[in-house]
Image (cartoon, rainbow, N blue to C red):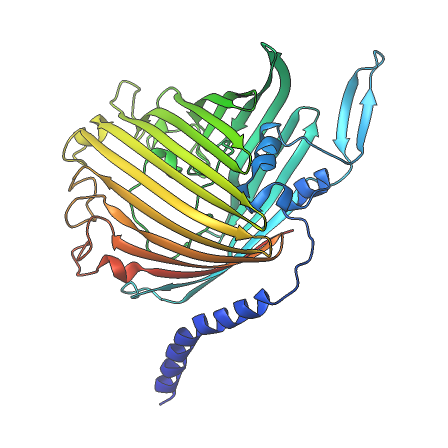
Length: 454
């Protein structure tokens, strides 16, 4: 009898949790807006509220993009300076701490629970990060993130970017130029159209998610070190060229025969973008690419075959300023070509050559009172390969669907959001995608998030 009552309580709690969250969310909407400072170390350094750099964090506006390109060094506070005998400045330290903390807590409900797994999951924290972010000295700044992972219970390096920047003149036009040392291809980018910073800015870490992704969509994140140069000419033309080399974290280093996805030599990454402000309109059109030779399993000798990946991307960002709101559209397409010689010889793919494409688009509107609405669409599709996608019953990587999100920022460093993900296809098809009669729509996910930065 007690077990029966307990089960009834659990079911009622699961049904009512979402309703309770909406009630709390509605109460928050009626709170007065207070001025505050988000991305705290940058805010303390510049003396500006986070809305100066963001429409909503982490989405950058025009000033935020300039702040990042200038090496995170813009400051309005006194610094601790020292000069040598030649009166040359040899020290410039911020008088405030460069440390910040970010915390996330979330709730996830999957439309139909995954067999043998719990549904209605709480993540507290979903993520907990410590940042060292700000000016180191003149022309040099950092964005270094350490993150606690609740799945493994460990703390490790996350997105990191160290920059040098300066200005010069090129044929009477201003040239902002710099160098970046980072650990995730695309983390150095300043637009919200690329994998490291594009929408959705947060998703459930416990709900099912499609398996297929291109290598620039996180496969190399925090497992490489890249050194690159970039420039912005006349605030119009942006260029970047970087080279990446494997720098494994949490795995054997130097790599040995137990290592996976190690770069052979170096992997080049390039980026070109055109941007312009037209009165209340802003437009960026860009392209980028990466080429990498990866050992799926590190060889006994370097003459062993490797897999070759080439990613070519195209992206667009549009912004329209209204008196009390801003409308933004982001879109990106990544086309990946694969020559999987090593994987083919190991018998883990049907053919040595294949393709994968990833398309995303989202549009949002943010109001001055802190409310935002976002609608997005995603589509991953590519070559059929029963061995490479051995968990998909029809051997296809295809997944597509829509996302809907409501966000509210009662303060500039605090965000609450409700997101719903709808799948039309999941890992290959709409119905029975894994051979166990599970359908794509059963993975539809309601995700509620509380996100704080202080």
